[in-house]
Length: 486
Image (cartoon, rainbow, N blue to C red; front, top):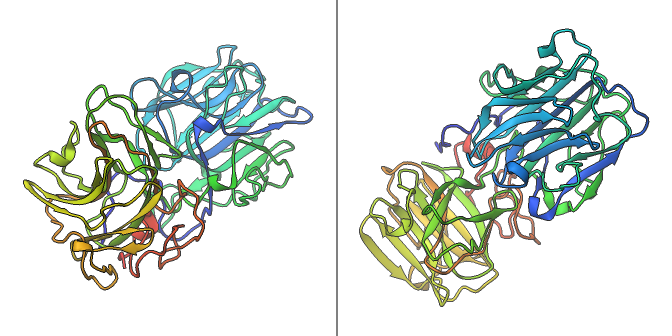
């Protein structure tokens, strides 16, 4: 039975309402949805509900990541953080109305459900703004300046509203990561339970539920991101479509709160204090860090003990190392592949050629099976944890040890064998070696970082890959991690 690393909550794996799609926001592209509302309606009562998965932790002013904003009075709903790899839930405007949660969000693999429910007519100030995270109302705040009774912010007035970017002139406060099930309610202060639930199948996992029967109000909207040609399509009882700005069909993802896909993990990294990775596109693209010549690497967000798994990496240049590594590996320093606590198998290149490197504690084995893979080749990785084997392909062709034919489905001629099971979870891994900076685009199936021309799913119907996964090999996602793994 394959197992997922602990802490990846908020992703339902069976039963209940299913979320088909999300939208990926890559802050460097300046992506957002926008709409100027018509006649101002009830500016005292509104609710915003959204599911989010974190991307880069470092974007914009004070690393503020805007989910929803309106007008020029700084009215907005954000995640906010500085140097600490954590984000607080924040809503504020220029009149001093500001609430910042003490609770922070650190899990780079989790889908979080966030709700801001406002009713400034309430006599008790704490009832005027209610925050919910994964179904629980927030009660602890670092900042708690509630609005005056009957206060009216710019939200829900006849001004421009945005999803994913602030409306102020600074223009740097952008969302980075994924959003699903974005709902704006005009005229009602709803609770989190109107958007999600704990059910008898998963009493400890907060799940989305169908919101189509809610009262959206005149200016309300529901963005479900299911139409790739019109991601701003409003699926509420209204027809309040939102304009897409620097958002394309390729930003539609199947990585959702009900099927969470693996990504790279920017806070689980092997690096020295002066080195940084440039990770973009929903934590799926590893770019040239441009920082120094030190070795550094990072793991992905999901690890397994059993099952058979497949993912792809497009190598825009041949430099760097991709492969697998143990969750027990100390990744606090550089040069992880040369660390004697490592269990890893890698495709490695110094920029002049490529080779396979087998590394288990203090033993190296070099092999020229993949010698000569070129820039823009797509490397397929097939990990067979049931039999302790690892296979690599180039552009769909698996090449085994000593350059012989290889067949992961049949279990023949693996590139590496005897992957140990006593070193913890085995996880996808990528590393920069020396002065050669990698430029790698990962595809775990939930939202390919590179253009996919073929569109191949695994045997259970999950994932979107350029090449067909070998029979029995599955995408790294929670629907599959909760199964027998094939």
